[in-house]
Length: 218
Image 1 (cartoon, rainbow, N blue to C red):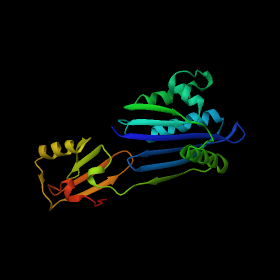
Image 2: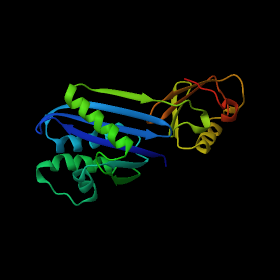
Image 3: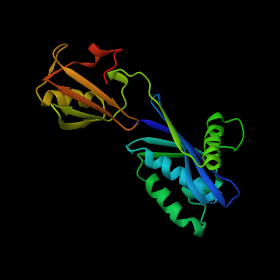
């Protein structure tokens, strides 16, 4: 099970006033950084919305998610100790999304302290609220087949064949499809996202990972 590290924060100018959210997702060398203006409201709504949108951005929920938050409200709702009725709709949506993860860990951090990532999402949220603009930045590392983000979606000759959660799964699927483990004659394409890797195989001959070590196929 892969671990996804999540940092979130919400901000509001005036409270109530313009709201902004910021979140960062990190997994296996990938990073997604988001700042988003979400309209008029309160700081509490922004804090909860930041977590909701971060959870929604993780399409593959079969992961160990580790949420870092400086919001006592968010922490309390996820731990079952907060019961603010006015925010029940947001809390219920957040908890519903949280329940979809393979595992969820919630870490309470101190606001405006020495946690660099928490300070970064705070700046993202404040900037979005102040400028009323949104942006995102995605960092993708150079990958090899052996360290590519799982699960993989395998397309053979443009047909979705199966989903693999490990290299051993890939071996079994290829064997089932009668593909040879040879180092020539194949066209292999990676479509690399934060959520999964699409592996497209054409012309019937598969090149085993060791043969592609250190190379990048996009």
